[in-house]
Image (cartoon, rainbow, N blue to C red):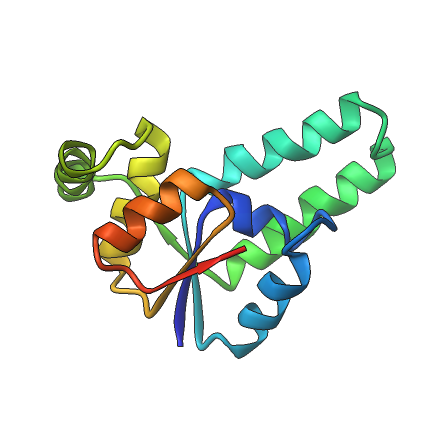
Length: 137
């Protein structure tokens, strides 16, 4: 199964919270894991928020960052190009999405994934409306 994770779902692989077990289970079943290039700065931003809030110490931050980049080596990263921008614009014109959410949904469509995994309610509703098979975590 080809699985696309948005940033909210991808972060659950590293930050234990509601939905983390579901994300880890579905990732174990994946033949291919895919993310948008946006996941990299978005997940690192989440790690840094935890670090600044002193919920993660500097050593653990370094471990999380290393784990993230190690995992990305095994994943397909969908980059932003003109074709993806056209799909993003189409998503924005069809559904009430924020810009970055539209890029995630367009990336999932571009990847021809079998399953789109998201922890974002508005993005999930748009993904359903745009005919993506969805796991909301």
